[in-house]
Length: 192
Image 1 (cartoon, helix red, strand yellow):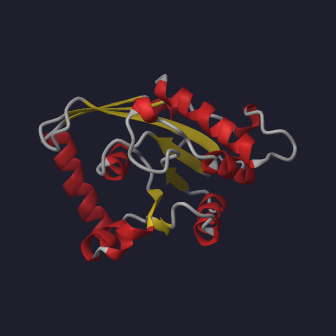
Image 2: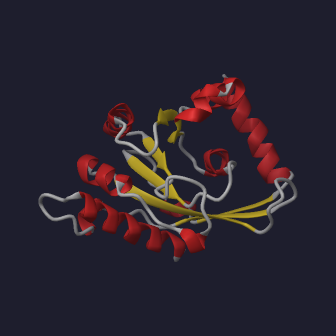
């Protein structure tokens, strides 16, 4: 109920009060486990992607957001789950892998925080999730023309899904392999 209300409200916000252009929707798999990964420029990105994407997304979100009463409730309503950044959060890793095992969509921002394209540096978690789950990877690039949060021109571009079998993991990948592949995935995203 809360999800549907929020979805309608934010769809109006992005489609009517901003100029939202969505490209590449033909690349989105209709079902099955999927890792949706994108650049992270604004606090609005997870909500925007839920509006632009045709399937519900379970985002990993920093733990501190869940401590803020209204924000935490919104995160939960949207299906997000907390992660303690800066350390190996086994609970969040298990939740993410369970989401993928259940055939759902895991939303992740591989850079771990909001960054500009010039300062992009992906963490290896995205590659590790792809390797362990075998889920397809769906790149999405979000571009805001202005920093204003209203009357903005926003473009969301989905690229072709990437099979983890096409990535060079090797038989027993290490942390540096995951980091290298995470960076390669972000380079693909920024070429969209």
